[in-house]
Amino acid sequence: METILEMKKIHKSFFGVEVLHGVDFDVKKGECIAICGENGAGKSTLMKILTGIYNKFQGEIIFKGENIEHLTPLEIQHKGISMIHQELNLLDEMTVAQNIYLCREPKKNGLIDFKKMNNDAKNLLKRLEKIDPKAKVKDLGIAKKQIVEIAKSLSFNADLIIMDEPTAVLTVNETEMLFQLIKQLKVNGVAIVYISHRLKEIKEICDRVTILRDGTYITTKDIDQVSEKDIAELMVGREIEEVNQKKYKGSGKAALEVRNISDDFLKNINFTLKEGEILGISGLVGAGRSELAEVIFGVRKPKQGDILVYGEPVNIKSPIDAIKHRIGFATEDRKGSGLFLDRSIRDNANIVSMLKNKNIFNNRKKEEILAKNMIDVFRVKCQSTAQKIKNLSGGNQQKIVLSKWIAVSSKILILDEPTRGVDIGARKEIYDIINRLAEEGKSIIVISSDLTEVLAISQRVIVMHQGEISGEIVGDNINEENIMVLATGIGE
Image (tube, helix red, strand yellow):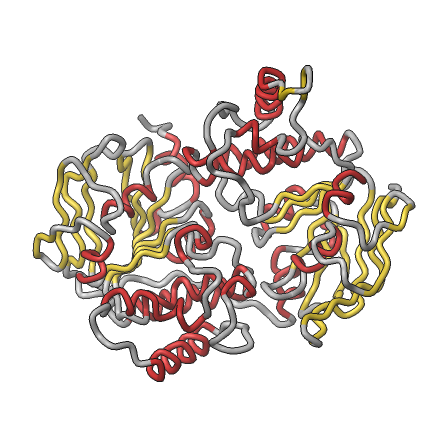
C-alpha cells in the first residue's frame, strides 16, 4: 500500500526535558494502524505534533508527499488530517450541528443556512447514531457527545483520521457501528490512526501496531504477528501478570442497602453492598448505572426509596451528606467533574478533605505529606505535588481522582469507569489498589462499560437495563454472555 504519512526522527522537549527521542512513524493509505504505549509513552505528544498543536520540535513530517511541519492546526485540517480527541472539545450551549460545522457553517445570501447545516449533520449522524442535530450538546450524555466528536471529524472529509480512545464511553452496538464505519473508510482509502488501551479492539480492527515506550519508538508489527499479551509486554517492557479475580472474603455485613429507589428514569432499584466486597454494575451506556450512583451520592434526588449505611437509614440530600457518611464517588468524567485542572496535584488530592473539614484550619504541611503519599501509593508520574493536573497524562489524572477519596478514608467507594483511558500497566496497579482496599474492609462499587474489567475485578455483578436491575450474576456464572443477555434485555 502507498505510504500517506511519514514522521521521521521526531524529538520534542518540555522545559529542557526531552519526552520524544527520535520517534519514527508511518501510515499507509487505507489502513488502520494502532499506536500503543503506557500513559506518558508519548502517543498524545506525537499526535499533537502531527496536528499542529505543538509546532516546536525537531524532525520531519511528510503527508501525501509534502512537508507539513510547523503548520497551524487549521492548516493541518485543510491538508486532510483530522483528530477525534479523547477529551471532548464541544461547546455545551451550542447545538449538535453548530458544533460539527463550527466556523464552517454553510451560507445562503451571506447568512448561515441552518436548514442545510442541520440536514448535513443529520446525514452524517445517520452513519453512527440518530441524534437530533438541533439538540444542545449540554443535554447529551457523554456517549452521545463522543458520537458528535466523531461526526465532526468525519465532516472534514479527511484523508487521515486520528481516533484517540474513540470507544471509551460507547456501547457495544455503538462500537460495532464505529468499526463498520472504519472498515468503509479504509475501503475508500482513508487512513486511520487508532489509539486505544483496549487491546481486544486493536486486534479486531487494526492492520498494524506501533509501540512507544517512554518516548522511544520500540517496534511496528503486523497485527497478526502479535497477541494481546505480546502488545502489552512490548508496551511495558516486561512480562504482564494476569489479573486474578479475588474471591469475596468480607464479613457479610451490609455496608450499603438501596431499597425501592425510583425517579423519572430509575425503577424500583434494590441491592445490597457487603463490607469488603467489590460489586460490579454492568449494562449498556444509558442503562441507568451512573444515574444510580448519583442518587447514592446525593447528586440526584429520588422520588421514593431508602438508603441505609451500615444498617442505619440516612438522608443524603447532597454530596456533602454522602461524604459525611464516608461515601466516595469517582465520576466517569474526570475532567468535567472529577478534577480541578488548573490546580495542583496537592490541592486535588486534598480537595475532599478540605470540603469535609471546611471550618478547620488547613495544614499545608499535612496536605503536602498526604499528596506525596498518594503519589507514591498510586505511582503517579509527575514532577512534584505542585504540578498542575492538566499537565499530567490521562492515566495519572485518573489516579489522582481515586486518591482524593482514599485520602478521606471513605468506607464505601463508587468508581464509575475507574480505568477509562488508562494503560494496561496503570490499570493493573489500580486493580491491585481496589483489591487491597476491599481486603482492608472497604466496600466498592465498580461501574464499567468494559466487560473485561467487570470480569476481572468484580466478585458479584448486577446488570441494569433501561433504568432497572435486570439480574444478578455470581460465581462461575459471571461471564460476558450472561452479562450481555441481561444488559440487552434478550431474556425478557
